[in-house]
Image (cartoon, rainbow, N blue to C red; front, side, top):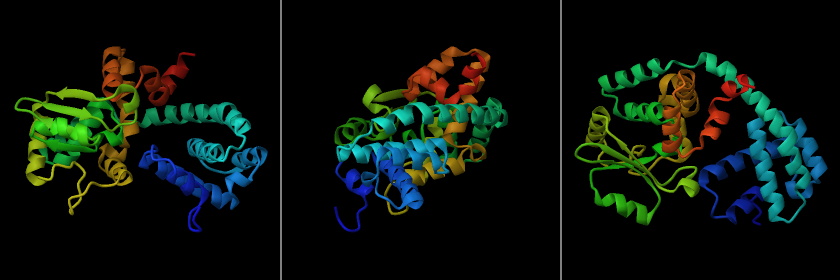
Length: 295
């Protein structure tokens, strides 16, 4: 390990299979550990690690990411992890579920209506704000994750196969009559593989064509020097330019809660399929207040 390299960086640099977004999160959580303890994880006992975790004043979800980083480091060094794993699966998991349900119930009362989201999308189109329209249209219609929006836009049909062979990337292919949204770089790709959706909205197709006139490089989140924004920058941009700055998570909650209250299971199934997420996961992650009310 280099002198300037901490134990988290060292382990991450030995593993090419971890996505950059995950590495970013692991490094962030490890910094919190160092700030609280200034001790290396591999030099601590399981009991001392659990004691420190119980005292660190950070959000439960952030603490869960930190535990994942701790387990990764200790497994790399063949150190015991069973006590830490058991604490995570019992104590921490219970705390996360309780805070998630409570926070979600409060958030659901403040969420916009489905009509407000749709009206916002229509206004963006009327104002010819093409990028924000594309972002908010897809978030409202498909409840996708931020990384799913990192797309290359093209009218060249040969690009569809070429991009799939050379590197996994997402694409919005503009055909003469509709748009094909192809995803090869998204969270659950290993389970669901390539996802392809036909978007038949004329307004959406027109917005993409107008966007290409302004940004011929084809990248939805391109930079002036012709490169693509980093994933953290894309996530921040989407948050800042989504309706009322809600971001993808809360927009998904608003849309899914709307369908759940209507009893529209078919629309929830459609989102589950297009998103690459099991219905049970959608309920647990985005509608826990509804499942809790039924218990």
